[in-house]
Image (cartoon, rainbow, N blue to C red; front, side):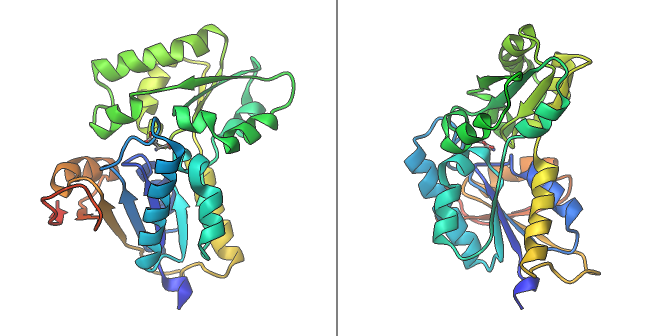
Length: 275
Ligand code: DGL
């Protein structure tokens, strides 16, 4: 039965685990498939055609594994490929939207900062979102090259990560931003550091919970919710090396996991790895 099939989720790497965690909280009965495209991360400084090709390959893989819906847990892949994926695949495709609208509702200073990859900030979908922001609110855009790499390296609070973040936050804070939108799914792992650097009075927003609710609404509307009263499972793949990636995935997921190699992965040592 279609409703008992899994939900597929992918990101350029481990960032989408922040979204996966919210989907797990929202939908405990669902089986979840997750692909970390760590062999190709980061996406943010790559040409749109390459990001699009990866998004198509990963969505095809997840549907091949039986996914009844696919969540693009990556703002960069959303900007580059969500429209194409929706036109190409017959399953619901749920994608990211940086939390600019909630930030507009919250800001008191009228200045919002958005941290994201260059590719996200340059995308048409982000441009459309910005066009919806009313007059009287100023949105400051801050590309953050290097930040995804810090998270992929597992450095969530080291000196280099702190210095990089301080450089990216400074111009936003100096211009009075009181709401910081995390427009990349890797960045919620840096929230404690961001809050520490931004200080009191600054709200930090991401879209994980909103996307998880959207997944529920979409599955409900399509009659695709898994039967309640069961505990869903998770299965993880990487296009990087499972042995190298396992520790970080287990640490971020906060549980023992098995990490399987993606068939088109970049690693020669392609056995699965468990923890
Ligand atoms: N998590 C991805 C996003 O939301 C990171 C993009 C990248 O790999 O640069 O944009």
